[in-house]
Length: 436
Image (cartoon, rainbow, N blue to C red; front, side, top):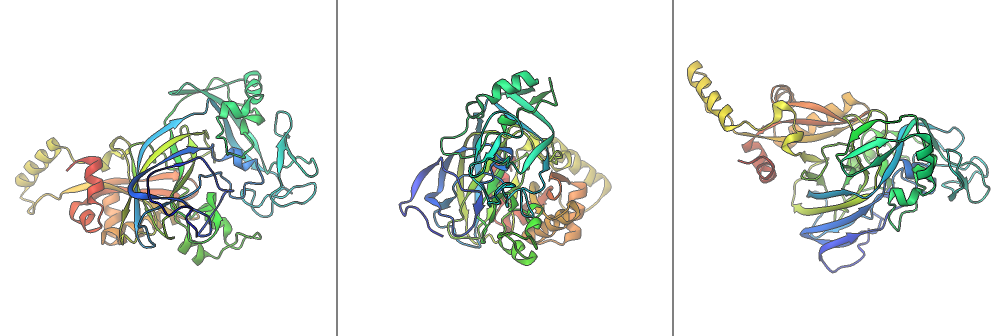
């Protein structure tokens, strides 16, 4: 791994991108100072890169940034200070992979059906799902098309899906409507002009589908999680890994958890020197589960503040969401609720002082939701030094299991004892989010 510059900066501005592959050999920008800020211009996430075969990772994420003093075994706390959508429109929908146009995995192993070139360079000719052409032979080379798709326009608060006429007008100026950053190389998905949904109104609540740290082995950015990463096990292409290696090296930066938004704090594992903080796959909105496989990909600007936690030793992310994003049972106990609980305890003679607790959300990933839940429960138990059955009980009566993405990203969210959070070195973040 190489760090571009040795001069530590209080603020690092990023407007460059990877080819979709992350790992210890990818050059990092910075380093940014411990406690410093990173300002990003992010590209749209899933669909544009998915129809750009030369992008090898499934997404087009920002160049990673090293953080001063971060070493393997540490953690990096990331405060999401601001997210602003710059796209005026986007297209998305449910996908279908096009047979004959990939080697085992359409996200990271594209092949031209005409000349057989791997990760072929393409150009856009015209409008519609056959507009992505191989530069070398002219073949229709997109690895994906829509089964049901839509085009949304935005006003900063709402999105509305448009009809075919308007979708095609927008497609004529796709890069401008998408607000593609200057250094982006993706084919804008607005080119496809889908319009199966017309007049649908939705609310904007932007968040980051990818935010995390660099994995310790090369892997496609979209596969840096236990569910998509499972596609690498035994794969026929160059990114193939075995299951133990995947578990060892991934950092679960591809979360698609809608609570990873402005105001939240995400704590990530460090597995390479400098940490290599990166982001991408910004979404305008998403319901839990991202059940269509994709949501509204947008470009935008992001400001983060980063802080190193020495020796934290976590294997995957820990999230402190905004209080309004917490499940009902996981919300902090109010002063009035505590007063009532004290009265109930005294009346019933239950003995012992009332527990002091604050919320935490531990991320679990796996090939399916059951595996992801098991992973998250085990991580929470290790982090907070409690048994898995205790975590299960706490998540049942003081929290919830929330689905980030199907097939296999979950949040194990519950109120944890203050003493356990303090022992783990995370109490300060819980108090910052939810008070004492």
